[in-house]
Amino acid sequence: MLSRLQTEGSAPTREQLAGVELLEWRTPSASDLDLRGSEVRHVRVTDIVSPLTIVLPAAAEAVTLSGRLSRVSVQGEVGAGASVSLWGDVSEGLPEWIRPAGELEISGPAQLDLSPIREMAHLRSLTVRGVTGRVTGCASLAGTGRLERIAFYGCYDIDTAGFPHHSELPNLEWIMASDVGASDAKVLRERFDGFWNGHVVHPRSRAWVERHLGDPFRTWVDWSPRLGRKASALWREAAAQLKAVDSVADHERILGSFATALDGIAERQPLDTLQREQAGEAVRGLAAQYLPAEHPLRGWMPA
Image (cartoon, rainbow, N blue to C red; front, side, top):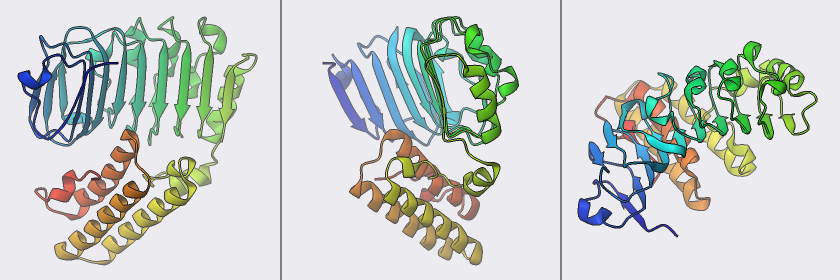
């Protein structure tokens, strides 16, 4: 069992980090976290809203970051074979510090270029979730040489032209494509054909994608059909109400009610890190359209 420190807001002090192997830091309010010389091996920083610089410890074994990842700067590299989870928008490109990773999970970017994984010589497992735009660079999947497990969930526009045939992935043990566009599903079935453990499930028609793509809660029905439908209905209602009024006071009232309702859902059914980020982005995205830059709802996360 790893020794753990859970903290929120202010950065942990050197004294607090003494002997700690797993650091969980939620809603950071400090602008930097320097873990050099510490015994921390697992780093989990979630609900990032403000600019943040993280200096990694030597040979970190696991790093999870969620929130506004474009505002995060990471110095150092993870250890060879480490596990990395990036829950947020990495549309500007995958960061160099992840290159030694052996396991990589990417969730929620607006678009994604996978070309840099060609340089990830230790990569064994890749999971991509909820890319609202296009996924490119899929030919690089055959470039690492070690990939054993590959999964795409909720990615509706995959550049399948360069997607490798399973025979080009000599170490492949399992590959999954779930909730992908129907035309992409057809190509991927051809690429997986003949491989004993390749799966393409829940293809989505163009009409379905056009109807649901803007909904930040579109995948929640797989977690809880009732609460997923509730969250989607709340988002649609808030978006419609915001368009119908003009004053900042009305916008603030509508978004405040939306945030409170999402907190109510979280109280009834605890959200995981990705769901918290999806809920936060739903409110922040609308707040960015309708509220002044300094308004606290533009940095909102579930309680």
